[in-house]
Picture 1 (spheres, helix red, strand yellow):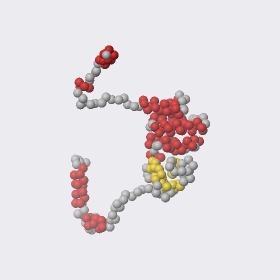
Picture 2 (cartoon, one colour):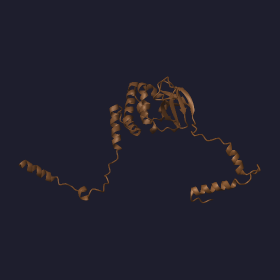
Picture 3 (spheres, one colour):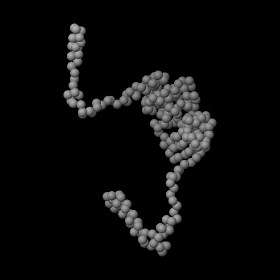
Picture 4 (cartoon, helix red, strand yellow):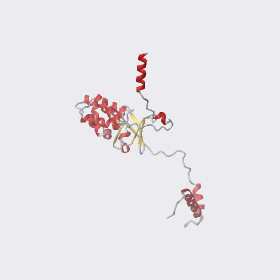
Length: 246
């Protein structure tokens, strides 16, 4: 095995070996490999200046839940109204939803097989279900929603209460990261305190518990006589007595 100490030198050495090898005759063409390469080179097409965009285009109609189907998977398009025809630009890792003329970008989202719950704007995704709380039961898109939040929403006794719980979760997600909302929803179900004010309190408590303990500032410029000075506060008491005497 060759020992490579410098990659650039090694590549230069391989390049020179390639050039030397072109000086021999081709085994079947009765001509130097370097001459055959010149003939091939003159017939090569120039490389394009713009990279090739590997993409597929689809037209879809947004259903009444703000969704469309692609490859047997349902995707949400929050900024597209139900019944609207859109153009879906399909990349290997993401989708871009444009208007039907392909001029205005309405939404961009990762492919479902790449999505992580933490990367989804759940406040925006859940907002549509405030007006359609029954639809939360069948929303395939909500499969990635953490179980504690899903249970918090779907365990409501009626649609009115479910709507209030969706509003509460959206409100929490607007103020806190997903992990805080998950813990707050879990505690709300555990202690049967599912109202919006209780959820806010639980989320605030979880958020404050995660604030790291403050570390003293490492500041070496202040003289130690000043930094470590502990004033005798009893002197101020004496000043007060003296002032009252005057």
